[in-house]
Image 1 (spheres, one colour):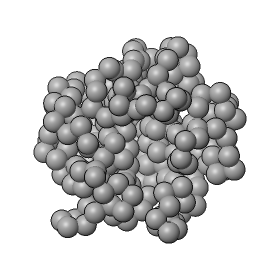
Image 2 (cartoon, rainbow, N blue to C red):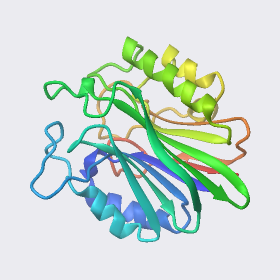
Image 3 (cartoon, helix red, strand yellow):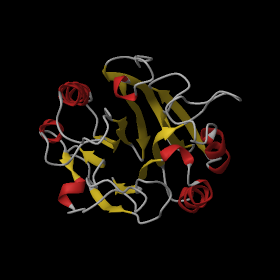
Image 4 (cartoon, rainbow, N blue to C red):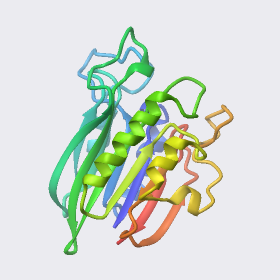
Length: 245
């Protein structure tokens, strides 16, 4: 199977993003997206008003052989989304909140968002896998440990430990590699960004100093065929790709 995860940055780099998705759609089984918007007409995000507010609809048209599902943290704001190729059997899908709750934002402060994990359990060639999609707790100009991130990581680990299939956790974690928040998740999962000595998961459009945010973690049963960070500039984040069985 092949998976791509990408923080879309609200679809600001629209045309290159559409080309990238179309180019990769034939061979990719699962796309996991963060910062995707699916707002009704004339409804704008208060946090990202310059994002493409209907980017989900545009992606649906490009990924026409896929089934998409969203998992918003906050109504009319950014969401998670998983697109799964139609030839795969979806056994279960849903979400769980690992920090605060849905619609928890206070006074238009994105650092008070609830944080959810979106998941889908799939069957592929008589094997069952669970794919988990995360956009972790955000706070401005800081990717280190704080109480929110530590609580989030502990709850993510509890959720992952409850899953009995081989599993993958991917997305924009919003944390640096050398944090306790990451170490908690790594106690039972392999961090491929570390294993493959990746030096950055951000494109040149991101000008702040810490160049890590995006990760793919896998349970020990997952057999890796290939892992890489693409250099396509379709966001201020770079796409991460995993081939596995």
